[in-house]
Amino acid sequence: MISLSTVDIVEAQSKYGFWGWNLWRQPIGFIIFLISSLAECERLPFDLPEEEEELVAGYQTEYSGIKFDLFYIASHLNLLVSSLFVTVLYLGGWNLSIPYIFVPEIFGINKGGKFFGTLIGIFITLAKTYLVLFIHIATRWTLPRLRMDQLLNLGWKFLLPISLDIQHMLPMIIEFINYGQQTIRAAKYIGQVFMITLSHANRLPVTIQYPYEKLITSERFQGRIHFEFDKCIACEVCVRLCLIDLPVVDWKLKTDIPKKRLLNYSIDFGICIFCGNCVEYCPTNCLSMTEEYEFSTYDRQELNYNQIALGCLPMSVIDDHTIRTISNLPQINNE
Image (cartoon, rainbow, N blue to C red):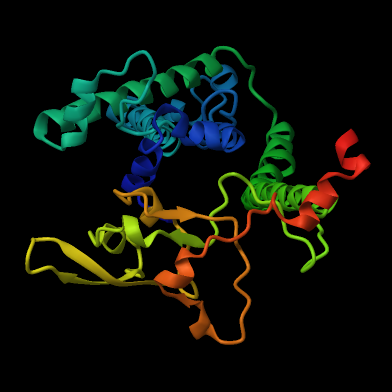
């Protein structure tokens, strides 16, 4: 948010504490504003209209009494107001955010906006203002007065070009930094994608003579489910634990004894996600995973296996003749 309100400027600096002051964000602008305010107040070394050393108070020597006091008070008030502007614009204003002097209780009262908090804010502002006044006084007794040509060269050839450069170059520098950060982030992502692609490109392909060979699956492979009809007690735990309510269990309650009798059991492998919940939580272990992964068919209805199809235990991959032939090759045995 861009605002010319002094309250908004101070609040913007208070969001980041001591290091959020505009003094650290624009140090060159702070120096230019400080020098310009000193020159505007006609204080040493910029007291060209007054020339106190040569002319004994300059043009004010024509006045005495109350008139001289008014001129003198006005000049000092001008210096005080410029110091207040420096405090508000660059030194955080009335916020107490100085390291090692931070007092949470006082800072909380200052944020509260009550009468006592207002007094603390005024005290903090005046303390910072007097610090700027001390810098002005130290400059007055340290540097000699400049000549008229030196002041004009300083103002028109040095301060004004730098201030204009800051006004135009600072947003460009910020945008350049943001663009550089985005470029580095994009290059990082591109590098990560390239490394992932390169790792997959260098990986040896797993090829088999399908369908004459079978893929040797891992120990944790989850293939077609094998069902043992005699062990099933029709508890329907597999139905309740299935994420998509896939198993279909038909049972009938016996009249002579309170026991369920299983009639039909089926699983549609065209919908199954092979999560393994039914196998893991079956209380009688009537369900188990097999190594069969081939479900190619022309009709999806054929993937709906009943208890007879589920009860057929497929041949183990290791027991397959083609797999045994390949595993007995001398190249594989040497490896």
